[in-house]
Length: 329
Image (cartoon, rainbow, N blue to C red; front, side, top):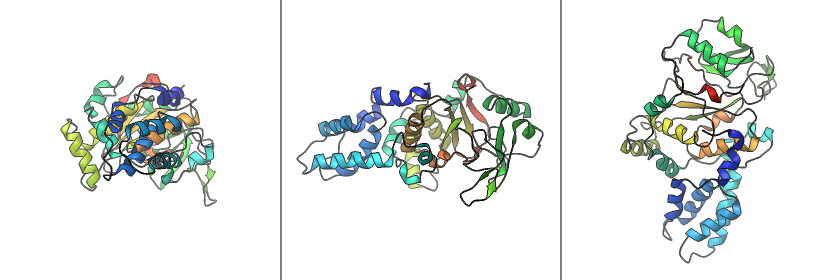
């Protein structure tokens, strides 16, 4: 696991991962999809190399006598950059439209799934485990995630929520599902519609955790079904195994302190980001989107699943991986 403050440097200086090397080593023949391949590889290379290096790599690995090849390469790099702009100002990062993030690249995901690292492996690797679903465990974890007595926004439903001091939440017995993964700076803020609310971007404090969620629905999406079949060939038999494999992969780039089961098919990974540069945080999230992460969790006030919360289907949102040594003070 790596410190996120060094994430941007690591992404640009480390050896290219095997799956990117494989992409570079297998360019399509002319007339069989060179243009989209150039764009996919440019997106894949963006976290690791500058534009000049990407152009050199693509030029060296693309064969044939294709007319205007260099122009196509530069266009692919330019389009990849417009999808993902590390280091943009803070206000632009918090309110990015979905199109500003890279599109999911299933070829990259398949290559990562070949590692065959599933949910049980993540559970076994957890430095600390809470073996039961007791209220004391839930309170202890919340205190470790948010020390002191900060204002926290939590919700029973997506449209039923409040912002209170952490200790006040302990006195409530009604089951909660959701939490904003950063302390709030004030009890209320102003929404985009000009209304007062306890849950807004305006009253969300500095980002404490970047939460990255993976979710696959093979029964409803043909592309997800194809990824599930790929995972099954490598021993990943359930949707949560696919999610665990991708989170384990991300943990080689940045600190992963907590993984929470949503009570459904998704897993949510909590990456501590206090003290990290905006470029590093954005680089990590952009790469996560490239391998299938949900873009919604970039929004500062976005609800995510509360560890040990109770989903409306009655299931407890259990932590399956926890490394308290990575938590910010």
